[in-house]
Image 1 (cartoon, rainbow, N blue to C red):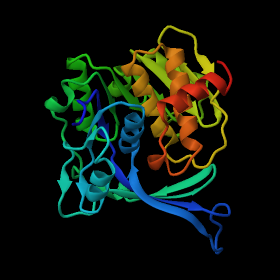
Image 2: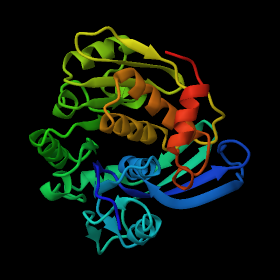
Image 3: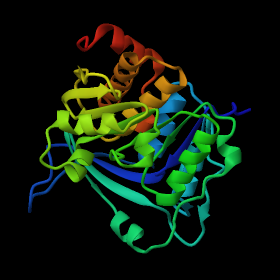
Image 4: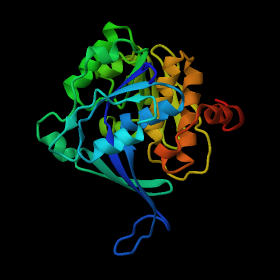
Length: 305
């Protein structure tokens, strides 16, 4: 019998076609050998669900409609896991949302049709339902789905359920009310071009009720709260096999930290260790970080903040 969900996740749930290349990244007009390829759950929320399940957390997932090709894969993959897919709506006349990712070590290139999907003006994701959120202790909300993302936020706020979000700018309600907002280099490049990371952090922290974390790939993470000094932490050093899902795993680690009420420093280290374990193997959905692996890395690897 499936355990009752502790965490509610709302956002992108995809089918990801991943291609790991054998001898370096693609070059124009040159042949590239595929070392391994997979069709597995992906997306910010799909990956977070996989990681949280591996960490021992039961989750309830909602968001992207799942189509005729994606649904069977997701249902088979999660059949024996503590991941409740029942809120996901079946897109009966569409294969479902998929992306395609080419990977070679530190380099990856995702491809898809998201610009086309969003430009249709039609909704291809669910409306959050109160019964899915009500009994959860923590949540994660992707910011991509407009009014529905904000509705999920309001449902969490009404029930005092802390939530984690990603890449939400300083003037976004999702950022302002989040327990944790994880902001990536891609987000800062889009919304804060030309500004130093410390300046971006000051702007984000000033409008946040919770913790803001600015990730910078292999560079120092910055984190802090309103009224506090900016703090820094180095990421853990591991041998990288694939960076696909690194940010989504970091988000999952933050959700775990919120669920277990970790202090800020411990939460950031835990999320960083989750991400480090994740990038040390491929494919991530088949080898997600286990709790004992994360705790061991925190104990023995990386540098103290």
